[in-house]
Structure formats: C-alpha cells, structure tokens
Length: 508
Image: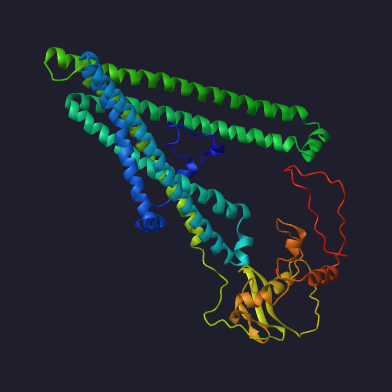
C-alpha cells in the first residue's frame, strides 16, 4: 500500500515505495508452488476463466476489424445490406464479449472468494493453536491485519493481477497479429509509435509518485501537529507555556509546504495529459500519412478501411502495453502479500498435545510444582527452582511484588506456557503429557483482566459451559457476587434498527 493510500491511476501504480523496494520478497520456485497450491483445487474453474478471457479479449477486437468492412464494403461500396450486417455483427460481438466478461468476472470472483475463505479458515485454526507467548509478543493490530487486510488482498491478486496478465497479453498478441495481417509496414510503424505513448506515461508517473509521496509525508507532519496541539493535554501545555504563536508558525510552515507540493503534483498530471493527448493523436496521423502514401504512390492493396482498422487496433494496444509494464510491480506486491501470510503459517506451534497424551478418567485435582524454571526471554529469569504442592480442597495464596511471577505460575498449570526446567503436575501427571482439551476443561481460571465477548450477558456466562442449567448459572453469579434482578421497563423506545430492546432476566 502506498503512503496514505493516495497513489493510484495507470501511471502511478507501476512504481514502488522505498519501503517496498527494501522489503522485496525473494521469488523462489518453492514460493510459487506454495502460492499456486491454493489455486490447484479450483483448476477446472481456472481453465474456464482462461477460456473466457481468451474468447472475450479476441471478440472485443473484432469490431475494430469490422469498421474497415463497414467503410470499404458498406459506405464506399454503397451496399446498405452489408452495412447493416456489419454494424449488427459489430454490435453482437461487443455484446457477446461483454456477456462473456460478466461470466468470467463471476467465476473469477467465486474462485477468489473461496481461496480467501480457505486461507482465513486455515489462518484462524493455526492462530488458535498458537501459545500465549505468540499473542503477548506480537502486536495485536498486526495479527488482525494478517487475518483481514492481507488475506483480503489475495482476492485482488487473483481477480486483478492474474487476470490482467492473461487478458492484456492475449489482447496485445491478437491485436499485433491482426495488424500484421493487414500490413506489415503499418504494423511495424505502429510498434515504433507505442514507446512514444509509454515513455511519457512512465515519466509522468514517476514524477507524480515522488511528489505524492512527499505531499503525504508533509500531510503526516500536519496531522502530527494537530494531534499534539489539539488534544486536551497538548492544549494545556501550549497555553501554560505561551507557545500559541510558535505552534501556529510551525503549522503554517508545514501547511504551506503541502500546498506547494499539491500544486506541483496536479500540474505534473496536467502536463502528462497534454503529452498523452498529443501522442495519441500523432500515432493515427502517422498511420494515415504512411497508409495514404502506400495507396497513392505504391499502388498498395490497402484500402481506407484497412487503414482505419490499423488505427483502431493501434489504440487498443496502448493500454495492454502500459498495464504489462506495471505487472512486475503488481506481481512483486502480490508475492510480498503471500510472503507476509506464509510467515504466520510457518510459525511453529509451541504448545501442542504430546503424541502419547493421556486423558485421565479421574483426577484428584492436586497441583504440584517440582523445581520449575521459566523465563519469557533468556536475559530475565522469572521462576527459578520453584517447588510447592497444593492438595485438593486447600487454598494457597501466592504473594509478591509486580513482575515476580505470580501470574506466570498460574499460566503454567493449564499450559499457556511450558516450563524450561522441572515439572508441573496435575493429579500426579506432568501437564505436558495430559490432553490439552481435558487439562484446560479441568481447570477454572478467573483472570485479573475483565473481558466480555460481543454478545449478551447470558451468552458470556455460558461461554465455559453451554449446557449449564438456570440454577447452575444463578449459583455461579451468586458466588461471583454479580447476581442482580433485571426488570423490563414498560414503554422502552425501539432501537435504531427498529427492533425492541431485549433485557434478559435470570432471577426471581
């Protein structure tokens, strides 16, 4: 993603930011095989997409060919019947091409959605198996981004990048073949004209890319000033130290720089379109000139309709060439996206069931620590040679300053972490040898952080035991000192979505 998401357009997306250049993934055979492994289950649908793209791309070019016949055989030949036939055929081909494009778009989207569905499920299942260490050492925002934005980006890769490679390549190849069939001289001339379109496009794109990046940096600076000075605490300090004029000057300077950059960026775009419009008009004029000379001076078999067809086909080559030049950058961004996703998939599961994990028929509930050592990182030991025994039916209080390892001791019992040395026994069995599901269902933990899932109070209360009876739920609430009586208030106003407010009761 470019800075601030501002970049866009056909002459901007073909350039990479400095950060993207520095973090380009290494494209290997193993990476490509892994990427295409997600496409393999849908090879039948992909084959159909390829056929649709080929037919649609070819059919979209034929109306350009028919313009020559409309001109030569219909208008110049004064044949109304042929004129109508060619016009209807051209309209029919255009309609069929668009309808096939709709079918191809549906299948392509279907494939992309199912692949992202597969990847999301795989990622969620993998992250659910990760240890608590993973969630405490990785930024939560980054985890969410990998699950949402990165995997959602895969859809764009399939529906846009892969499709653009195929459709633009087919369109360009078919257009060039048709041009050479009409006249190799004009075809060669047309190929020589294409760089006149591409070079200014890419030069203007680089200029606007650079200016937009600088403008975004300046905009970030302005936002930083606003966040600092417009907050309650920031405004208090500005007023206490009399810095209003200084902060105004700082804001005015940054705002002025952004305005100048924005003007330069807009004008760079204007000059681009001037050059683009000039070149796109020069190309057809040159073809008409050379074609006219061939007809008038060298008695060529070319007709005015043939030259018109060549001009139309030349115009159809500009965009595919420009898009294919941008494909490399799109491809690198796509591979970087897959690399980020695979980084998470490749993270080892630290806590998992032992191959010979046991599920005891019953347990005493006794907990024992034997010479336990534990550290979150090698440089700071949390627990060293900790040993104690807690018998069933007894209570024990663990007292100590913040950071001394009290919560760590609790977390080691249900294997949120594994000890580095020693043993944690539950019912006389090392917790690393007990089935994880059984172990964690046998242990009740009340964390010091209060957390509620998005749902009703009842749903949260039943989270650990969905089949609990009303009496069990009430008793649990009483023990937790959260039991209250709810009363429905008559005349409650409807919610914003039109539904009546719902208050669940679980009391007498």
